[in-house]
Length: 355
Image (cartoon, rainbow, N blue to C red):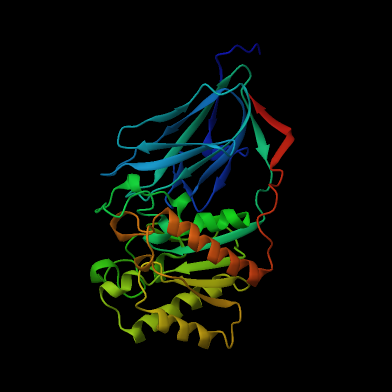
């Protein structure tokens, strides 16, 4: 084949072994990669000067956002709304690039990724190797989703542009430790009751093992070294009583321990309120008599710290950074991990797909 500057290579994202999918996901009947959870995405290495990503139909009232990270430095955000068909990245140097695409906001329906089209003089994909060896799972609510992290204290209401899960304490903790994170979190959810006291809808005690936000148990074999729970903030909207809260907390811990028998489990609490601090301390202290791999991490609330509040009373970026430093130190002590190792080689130079 003779290559020209306008040569292209089209790849079906869900079908390619040269594209690494990040996080829990499904594939639709028509072969599209469906991403529900915040910070799920995919990564690839290519030779070329640009690419475009095409989407399937997206049906939601508010736009969802993706973040495209190129060569670990250049970050670009794009809104995906009803009718948007593609995102185009162009005018790169015609050479090798590493790209990661993240879904960084919640949405009423999953984002559907159809095809990746590379262009350049001789566009090609290169194989990624195994990736990061450290794995962390985060289970929680809007705090873990990074809701409000980009807003200011004067902002109210829910606007998706204010959300970026890659800037939540969870993603920043994983970055400090050089770990791959999975964020299983839904805004407004609690253990006994959800935001504003609702007890009828799905709660953290149910969705932590969901494959998608709508259900199904995830059985993809991904096993974390540690699980971080950040839940209980929304229960005070009921409020849930201390006894029923402790019962629900024990139920959640039973389920996670059964799912991950060897994982260290950390319950992080206090970023937005302290209503159940003592209940959690007592519950976890009692369980530690038979489960020493369980830890309670109480952090200071943003309400007592200046400049840490983002949109709608949620943690801003400064709070995310502070808590990530605190939590990563706790995880390092428990697992004996050192700070983030040097970036591992994740490219196989012998395997290449060409147009």
